[in-house]
Image (cartoon, rainbow, N blue to C red):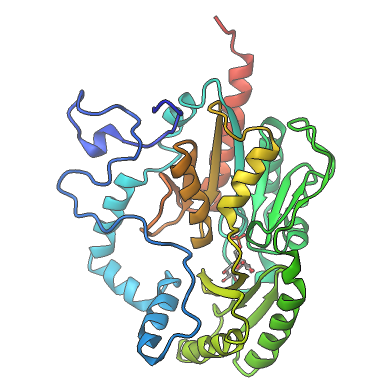
Length: 372
Ligand SMILES: O=P(O)(O)OC[C@H]1O[C@H](O[C@H]2O[C@H](CO)[C@@H](O)[C@H](O)[C@H]2O)[C@H](O)[C@@H](O)[C@@H]1O
């Protein structure tokens, strides 16, 4: 553990470091186990995709679109060859399971206030074809409700805030919709803060009319592509290609780019089989995390431990903030090796739920434990 209390996994057995050569928790974490070929460091995840890209970049677009599909045939072939398995094992050394490392992780939180940040799609609900049907299970809802009883808890999503609230249905949480551009406190108020419910921050409000226009143009332009779906997320727009035939991906990408060329104040990023159209303002999930910590009174505190769990490229902005602060626990939800600034991993929403329930149980027991 560092001075600031950053928890970084160094699973002793897996890394096989001689006992006294390194502290148990190091920051930044060792990037590789001896003898393991490690790929490059954190990519510029979530970086904008060139809107005015020319023909030379088309190959890049397709690769990028394919990369957001874990079931792509190429990946399956690589898995069969065992390459993927080896890569996964090496990746797990760098990003061990937050469940396997749970005891060390909570040990490092002693004396600190844990604040929990949860992405929605792919973290609390499984990824499904229809974005309107990405329901959260009742058991997951109960787990999140229990977490919020013990720790300040926020949902940080690319979705429009109202939509994500419709799915989560818990009034006691903070919600940061539109990739953090629409932040609201708990409707019921929370015992964790004196802040009354209500909108806390909407840094992109002047973009509303522009986003409406772009949404309508994108709907019109892409309606000839079977399976394409345009989603209005209030301060941003998603163009889904999960259900689009791969042969039409480039056409779809070109359509999105052609609409955006008239809007230099908007940028394009890519998520899981989705293009995200967003204002160019310097605001993202990482900024939302910092804003919420500040609202909760933990701006420059060393006695706080933010735990952020997410599965998407846009969550990387939050993982980066935790690394920069030298404080907190970033957990990527993924079954596949990905370039990430997160320190830990969980495979899927079911594991996220297990992790949340363990956190609640640990907190309950630690309160019941006599303090000598
Ligand atoms: O920040 P998040 O809460 O993870 O939101 C990111 C995007 O999530 C949704 O799309 C993703 O989930 C869909 C439902 O499982 C899936 O069909 C799609 O392919 C995924 O990209 C949401 O629909 C988007 O608007 C969010 O931006």
